[in-house]
Length: 203
Image (cartoon, rainbow, N blue to C red; front, side, top):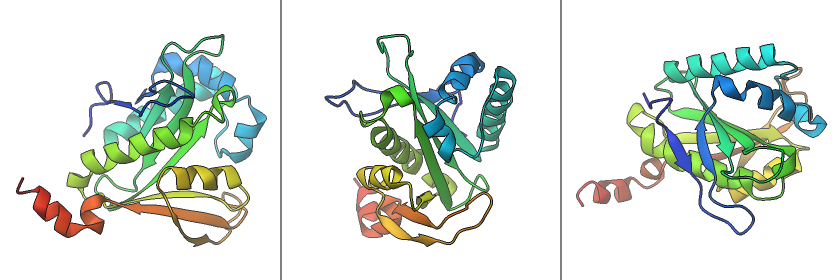
């Protein structure tokens, strides 16, 4: 199981923002999480709303338990040295598996209001995707999926920029999924190109 305290990922640099760091959430993030969750645009799409520090503390504890169980890997996205009062937290990315050895996992994300439009989400998702296929493939991971409601056009653009082409439509399933959705997916390199994997193993 990946070490929750030692796992840190880095995105590629971009003109809009420097290299971003992905690290596990900690108890010290509770107050900032509550601030970020006050954003109406963010709350519109989230199933879980963190209204106070008690809510945030419970959520953070759940992330740690799920990480240790191998079913959910949640990362805070930081912009080191970010200026201003907003602080370095600029987003969240997560990978969820039904079981620690499931072949398919789902990824999700959100971006802080002050960091939108800077490419934070696609860069973070690309870093998460590379880490997942590199680290979890030995446990059987072969496919990653990204889902969003059909009217969330921004998420559709993020998925495509992150290398997740549209794979199909999802039927509405209220109340958790009130509208038709889009399913985007990527296969692990070894799953989509077995001959390449075989060649690489002999290098």
